[in-house]
Length: 271
Image 1 (tube, helix red, strand yellow):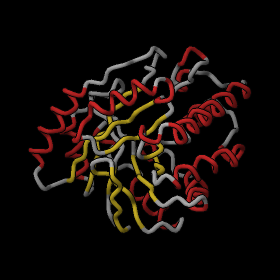
Image 2 (cartoon, helix red, strand yellow):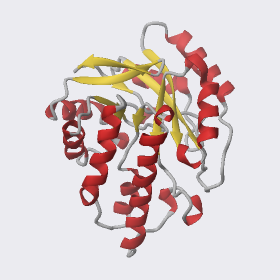
Image 3 (cartoon, one colour):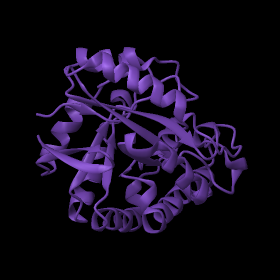
């Protein structure tokens, strides 16, 4: 089984203090064969304010230094988690262009309200006793995800954690699921599949496992072939958590490969 974790964060992200050297060592200690750092660049910050610059010089400096130190002990890739690309596609494309030839992988995320609720990250909304707000959050995320996959296919390689708003909707005790929007989700997956993009199984440091089997089944039924896996680690001790389980879920759903990316091209590895 090819052990890989291609969603992780370091001090370049606003919500992590980790050093890449430490997360890469944790990847080696966990027995991973491949690891990708995907620091955040959200066009809308945690506070909902627009952002236009990603610190590529710092990201590339730490990547180059650690890659040289590692030698052949680990395949290390440079990625980016690009959030809310639909808010300003021109800025999104400019930031990606600055990644240059070293950029291996782009996760496409929807972390924020866009045009509502002060553009805040879904994390900061309170959905308790407010099922209508919860529905609006999920519906807005799915609407912008549809725009991403249909109009901005160059702004992502793998569709990141489609369940993201549900993490906080469920946190606040509201019962809502993607099954309530199955037709919309299947339409998104069909578009992802026919454009040869990937879907991410994001196990959220081992916390999100139960939700993925039916989602994987839908993706496969919609023609999906490329699946990436990520623990979404923000600390070294979170690296690879839930990854073996994610790979087992892929096998159970009928996939025979897990996907990584090099130079923004998919690479398939037998499970």
